[in-house]
Amino acid sequence: MQDFRGRCTGGEVTVGTFAAIPHPVAIEVTAAAGVDFICIDWEHAQISRERIEDLVRAADVHGVPAMVRVPGHAPEAIAAALDAGAAGVLVPRVSTAEQARAAVQATRYPPVGARGVGPGRAAAYGYRIPDYLAAANEKLLLAIQVETAEGLANIDAIADVDGVDVIFIGPGDLSVSIDAMGPAGAKKLNAAIATIAKAAVRAGRTAGIFRPSPDDIGIWMQSGIRFFILASDTMFLGASVAAGMEAAQRSARD
Ligand code: 3PY
Ligand code: MG
Image (cartoon, rainbow, N blue to C red; front, side, top):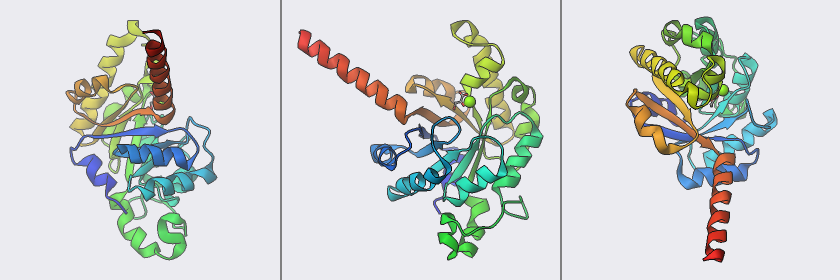
C-alpha cells in the first residue's frame, strides 16, 4: 500500500484532480500526464459503485494514488471505496464534530474505528487480509469536506477530531451556504476559507481546497493550505478543446 497519507500529512504540497469520466482510459491518461493523486468523484459524477474498482486499478497501473469522494456519509460507501483499494476517502458536507467522528469510525479498523473486515480487492480478495489490516489505519487518508455554514460555525470542534487527516474546503458549496456567491461575495468567501484553513492548521490537520484553476494555488498556500484538488478530467478536456479550437480558428484567419 502506498503511503499516500504520509505524503499528504507531512507538510508537502500535493496537487491532484477529480476524475469524473467513468472510464479507466481517462484515469490512465490523467495518471500518465502527471498528477500527485486522483480523486474519483463518486459524489457528483455518474460513476457507479461497480466502476470504482476498475478506476482505482487503472490508477494503480501508473502508481498514482486514487482516493474516492464518496456520495455522503454512509459507512457502506466508505467501506466500498476502501475495499476496492482506494488510497483514501473524501467525505463531503461534514458539518459537525459528530459527523467527523463517524467518518473516522467508518474509515479506520478497530480499535481506532469500526470498519468491517472483508475480502475485497484491497486485501487481495482475501489472500492478504492480515497484511492489509496491519497497514490500513496508518496508510489510508481520511479527508473531510467543510463546505456549509454549519461546518464553518463548528470548525474548531471538527478540526479537533482525532483520525481526520485533511480538512478540505469546498468553495462552491460554501459560497452558496453562506450567501457569498460571485464577485460580490468574494471577500466573505475568502475570509471563511481562511478561517477554516487556520483552524485546520492549528489542530495539526492538513488544510485542503478545490481550485478550478491553478492561478491562485500559491496565494492559498500562504494561508497554510497544502492539499489541492485542481479541476477535473472533464474540465481539463473542455478547456483543452476550447483552446485548441480557438488556436485553429486564429491560425486559419491569419
Ligand atoms: C465544492 O466546491 O463545493 C466542492 O465540493 C469542490 O470539490
Ligand atoms: Mg461541494
